[in-house]
Image (cartoon, rainbow, N blue to C red; front, top):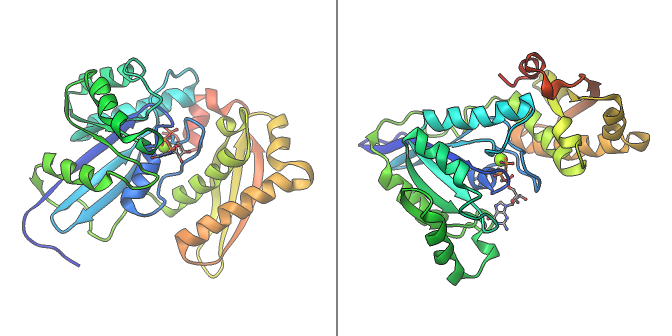
Length: 295
Ligand SMILES: Nc1nc2c(ncn2[C@@H]2O[C@H](COP(=O)(O)OP(=O)(O)OP(=O)(O)O)[C@@H](O)[C@H]2O)c(=O)[nH]1
Ligand SMILES: [Mg+2]
């Protein structure tokens, strides 16, 4: 449906340390899984755009990688991505969670301060603490920066999200609809498929494996079923064995779980073929990163 009249619109970067629930929040607001999530940190590696559209507003949320101390080229890429997304946005939504102290988010706040953006503080995972503790924590954390407003929400239960969205709308200027009102993301299907496969690796494998993995869709033929073939890149031969698993069991499970999500995304049946490739030390080499889509 085409809306007319003036609306409020703008770009809001969701920034914070890893694992505070930025991507879970985005999916909750958009009502669709467009950004992958996992219980371990450093899941998101790129900017993921999600469009929240109502009759009187269009808020474009930009999910970002968690800001952390980056050593390897991949981690540097991630943090740079978060910071460049912040500098492109109108407003910074600083997300934190109950286990984080004011000191812990000081680095994030320093970047937000440098960016000069209006900032809103969001304490996510509020379901983990009693109601009376929420205000206290918001007060403590709020003293770290000059926030326009502060909210406690749960991206898991949806608690507090409506109030937050109303508050964010109020901070945005009058403006155009930047995207068609039925669009939810600018990500390509290929990217979303790669991410869904990578998410299964993040969930099903352990130790260094999730961090040594990149996924590249090599063939994508739409149809019924849609045929997708994808390579899972690891850094060392020993990691290849782990991803394949005894008798191919691990790779089969990754494929099974990813296929279900991809089918839901595409609305077709999917034939998914996965294979594992060793791309030596790809997380440490900028040229390899670029080849694997991190550019
Ligand atoms: N209890 C609770 N858990 C949550 C909530 N939001 C997210 N989580 C969990 O927190 C973990 C991390 O969530 P993500 O959305 O991947 O976090 P992120 O901030 O995007 O993490 P990175 O991409 O690594 O920076 C997952 O296990 C989520 O299920 C919440 O409101 N309450
Ligand atoms: Mg994330």
